[in-house]
Structure formats: structure tokens, C-alpha cells
Image 1 (tube, rainbow, N blue to C red):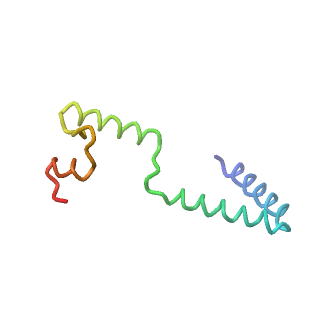
Image 2: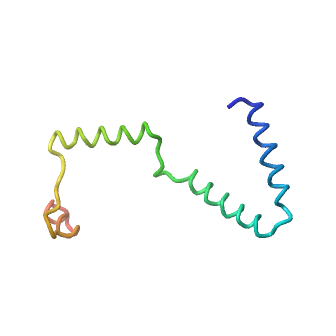
Length: 88
């Protein structure tokens, strides 16, 4: 996005905020939405499509090398981890 496009976007955003500024309800909703966006931006678990595809590729390579385990039918996670050598 160019600087000019970004400036236009900022101006439009402020115009829209000004248009709803007299509504306590709408400003409250906007504040909640902005808070969610900030949390999303700071969420370290989010990844790009490329990062996601790389994780899938790495997992497929681990499976090909036999580096995986399978839970048995009816087995709970704690039992599975103990069977795999974890001290729980």
C-alpha cells in the first residue's frame, strides 16, 4: 500500500469514527472490536499461509521418518503420554 493510499484510508477511518462518535452504543462496539484486533495482532499463534504450509511439510517429513505416535482406541491423553515415555 502506498503512502497516499494509507493516508486516504486513515482519513476515511477518522471520518467514519466521527460519524458514529455521538452514539455511545456504536462507540462501545467499536472499542470492543478494536480491542479484538489488537489481541489478534499480538497473537503469536497466528501464522501466514506459507508458515502453515511449511508446518504441514515438516509434519509430513516427521511421519515419513516414523517420528509420531498413535493413541489407541479408548485411550486418554495421560495414558498415551505415559506409554510414550513421559512422566506424568
